[in-house]
Length: 410
Ligand SMILES: CC(C)=CCC/C(C)=C/CC/C(C)=C/CC/C(C)=C/[C@@H]1[C@@H](COP(=O)(O)OP(=O)(O)O)[C@]1(C)CC/C=C(\C)CC/C=C(\C)CCC=C(C)C
Ligand SMILES: [Mn+2]
Image 1 (cartoon, rainbow, N blue to C red):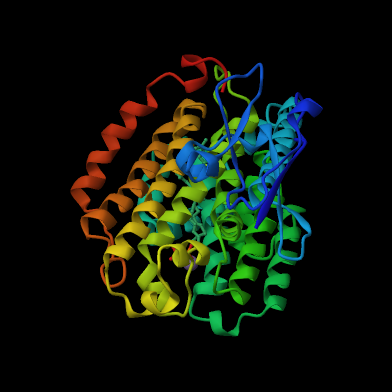
Image 2 (cartoon, protein in one colour; image 1 turned 45 degrees about the horizontal axis):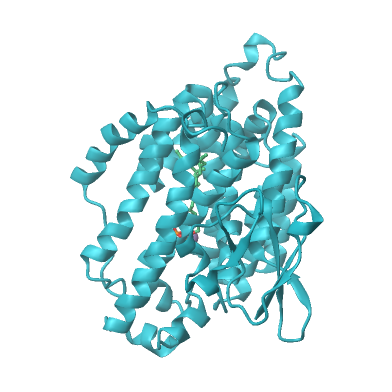
């Protein structure tokens, strides 16, 4: 696939920055050298690096076009998703300027009777299905905790549609109906008590519908797609099913008043955390997914490593597999690193749970390594002791100054 760099859509870029042709480059990201005045760009491939090995510049400063085999230019997934980030950030900024939250009557602080029950049920479901997330939410303020439970339950139910016991009967039409329900709850007409909790959350926090719609879109693609040709395709899937969670959560978590970071950069970090978590999920579940006929790994990178679908189905750990896995783990860690830069930009009370979940999820990668990359038959599992240890470490990190106050604006 050939890549053409085109003028960035973001403000502040001059035409001189814009066009450069990369012929048959494999990567869709360029490395920005540290010479801001000249704004030099160097293709990662020329440096012998994958973009994620070279340090991923924000797509805010460039935009890349991939050329498909028919010679048509297509916008990269990263750029498409970054456009969503910009839109979400703009919406949040606009809504925060409208003093809806402050103008709320006092009695809205506590949900009314039926709603309390609905939120409590969301909490129970979260505790039952995701002990780690639940533990994290216990560190939040009550209103935020309830909101995250409601979002969690909606995400879990959406995932259950395609992964749960009735998954074989789920059609695109069923997902269309689920989307209609989503629209209804966003306009204050919830279908059941769990939807009512989310509907209430939406009235309390400046949450937009798009990430929710996009998650449903991810489930639609999961119904029809079992292979990913390259990382660009996989990235889009990860955005849909997990990056969206980051975008849904930021308006609830809140950005610290003292933070000097841009709203866009906080959203980018939240997106990166979702992507990192999903890549980790994928690497942990390779064997389990293969038994369902699914391979969520970039086919081109498998081929470059001398591996085929058959090797995945056979599930034998070879040196080729180890080398392939090392690169995949490295990429996931880069997304975690990107996410780390945003955590302390969140409001103080939200940092600890996010750090805790980041550290705990990232440890799954260490466990895959400790299992000598056997993710075919061994499930990477973080033991209770390590989980408990992560909590004080997370707390310590949450007390550090936001990156934007340490190194200037991010
Ligand atoms: C600035 C900054 C860093 C902000 C933080 C933003 C933030 C809170 C991001 C959260 C990211 C996150 C937790 C993403 C979830 C990723 C995930 C696990 C997605 C799973 C998708 C499908 O996976 P699959 O089917 O392959 O796997 P299973 O075997 O089924 O597990 C999901 C299952 C999609 C549905 C997601 C959820 C149910 C999780 C939703 C979680 C929350 C709303 C809680 C977030 C709260 C905290 C405290 C992190
Ligand atoms: Mn699932």
